[in-house]
Amino acid sequence: MLVKGRKVAGRGEAMAAHYAFGPLEDDAIIKHRLLTRTTTTRGEPPLKKLQKKFTSFTLEIEKDADNFSDCERLAKTFLQELTTFELPLLKSKAVIGANLREKENFNELKDEINRQILQAQAKNNLKRVRLKGSTRRSARQSGG
Image (cartoon, rainbow, N blue to C red):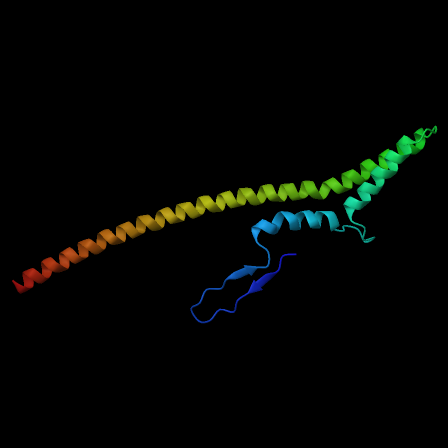
């Protein structure tokens, strides 16, 4: 679980966000959430449900009985559960893709802004040098 902490900023002090977990722990946290998350009101984790459906299906297949209808029913149940499990993963993949594109756009915009800042600083430095030169000339002319 990610917990955001807040630092109370004083006057003229920037607000900083602190997270309880760093980027290195993200994979472990995501894996844990995937294994334990619940998407139904019954409260059983989807991966555990999927495992149960698969186990029931494979046990039924391994029987030596004439059980084609049971196997077919369990196969359909397993595939339905697999689809139910896969859907949120596909949605997450789409969200990740959108976030990566947005991050790329942000980085491009940030680079453009930084380029413009550097350009403006260079112009300001040039104008500062010109201003100092002209004030020196003016001082020499009025004093000389």
